[in-house]
Image (cartoon, rainbow, N blue to C red; front, side):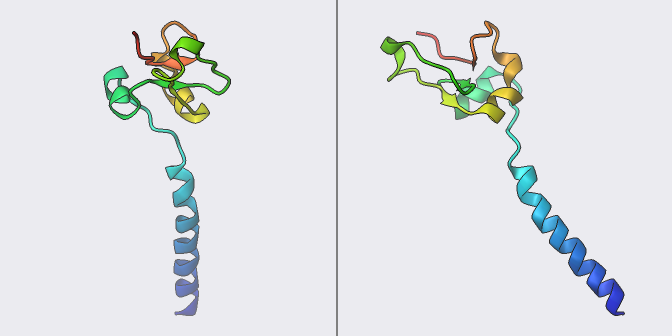
Length: 86
């Protein structure tokens, strides 16, 4: 009786520790319309430098994991997925 209880408690502890790691994965969007509902100015990879005239208005969310998950939507390969146009 004691061994199954220990195994159950151990399994529950491992599952609890594994859950936050899964939550840390970046969200993958189906298309730019869905991404822009959450991030209206798009998503950029780290190191992205906005042009001075557009810094205030069109600054995208900079996040490496999020950009990597949605990299296919960066059509012009400038480091910003689903950037906002003027």
